[in-house]
Length: 212
View 1 (tube, rainbow, N blue to C red):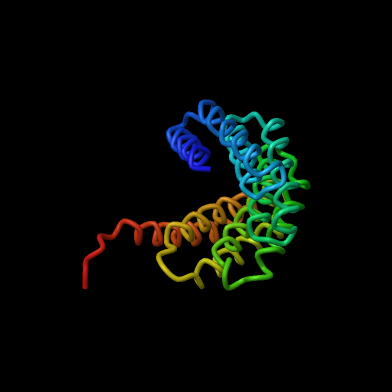
View 2 (cartoon, one colour):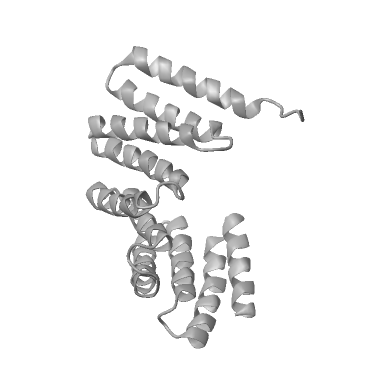
């Protein structure tokens, strides 16, 4: 496993540097070693499959990404259960893949499946819930379902505001996306108001932090 973890870390570093194609070589080596060590049904095998799926998704090779995500999901469900948080991460990845492909109905199904799992433990996964609300809002906007999109943007803001720590960047991003939506609805006064809120929160992220 030490060698597999080494290859996995190299793959992650390559992805971070924009070399996802090269990263796949190392992720595949990780996958082979882990299958030899643990068999095909192990959560670390699922992680390797998921990482390969992520790399293919980065490259825009969506069919291969979906194939690896599907294998990862099947393995994770068998090893960790259908309602485990690590399972929902793969479900979310599949939803995001369908969103990128423009298959918004399928994307919504997977996003909502992931959300259901996280909402079973809301205190532990508040940040992930806020992220999914934002993604659902973007997804419904892409479908032209503006009422649902507005609702999810509002829920996302509310959830981020409840989180501990600095959330200004996340909140500003949501307000920007929300402003773009209401501008499409020709509610220009509200769009300006939301953009101003986004600017205010972006300004918070630029303020120097002084020790007290």
